[in-house]
Image 1 (tube, rainbow, N blue to C red):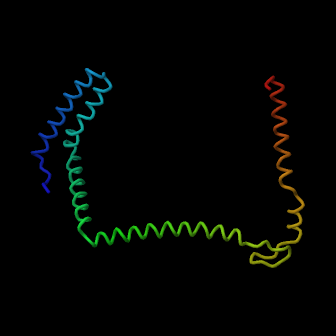
Image 2: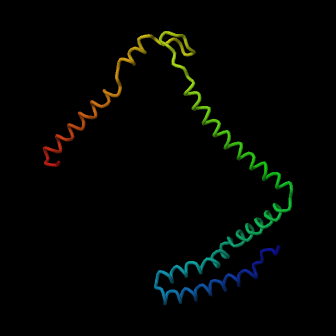
Image 3: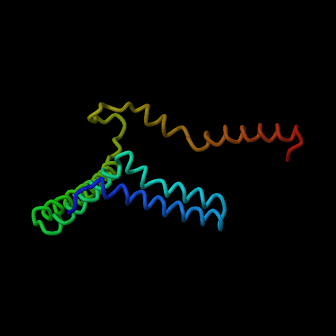
Length: 162
């Protein structure tokens, strides 16, 4: 592959910029100020990349990428690495699915221990289970909501809003 050569790229970048500026002038005349300004912005990029040294960086990235792809295609060692990478991704996804399923099974298989029975966390008091069963949670939750709505409706009616 050819090396990065400053002497050939400077005239090339200046030529691209000049062509872009000419095209931008025509775009400005035909389509207006916004199109011309956008063309000038794109036209100045080749020279700015050259002057900041980023053009050499872009050149090195492209050259390295092409070299890597060429090496990838013809190397069985690299293909073995790609295969192992694929296997590791598949195993990671499968472990996530298995982890999600095992969490659901634990929640479903957990038996409810009767009152007073000794469990791993200790005995549950008999009064705790009867107290839970005695309190209806749905009815109690609806009462504060309805009273709040009633208050809101009263306020709206006082202000003449229906």
